[in-house]
Length: 182
Ligand SMILES: [Zn+2]
Image (cartoon, rainbow, N blue to C red; front, side, top):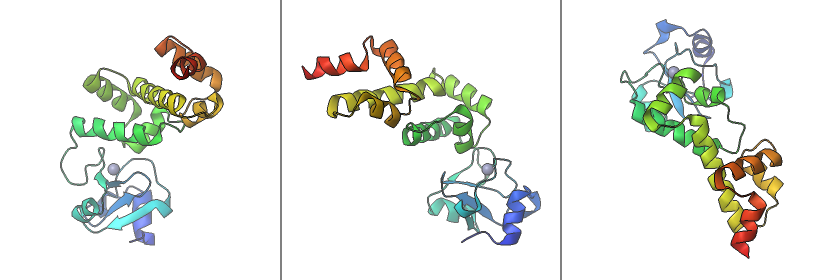
């Protein structure tokens, strides 16, 4: 169901008096919230309205960590899994900590803190490891030029890709490719 004007207004103004009357899911993130949720206002076209939190869950949406629309806290373990899923789906994009936190519905500094505490590494370090692993795979299995691989794996420039790759694997992407194909 699409948002009616009063529902959209309640979402825009974080109207707590509407909590319990409906829930809204955001199709781009697959997370659902109470009307009062203070997370960044989504695009209206991406909003689906649900009468109950159960209906939202049945439709494949996950409860927001911030406003807890099911009344239960999302455990940190679940949250870390969710963050990893976002990284796995969006590593090729310019995924800043702010954007990651927006998609995972939490404050950037809190997300950083929790993630590091749970996994022993920062979300940025994990993102980079995911990017490098994909790059390695593409170097091995495709003949794509380095520039294309850099872009596809979310590196800002081929030079940055090379430097990062070398720091991690002690060889440049091109020598890595040469070594495994020769
Ligand atoms: Zn929320």
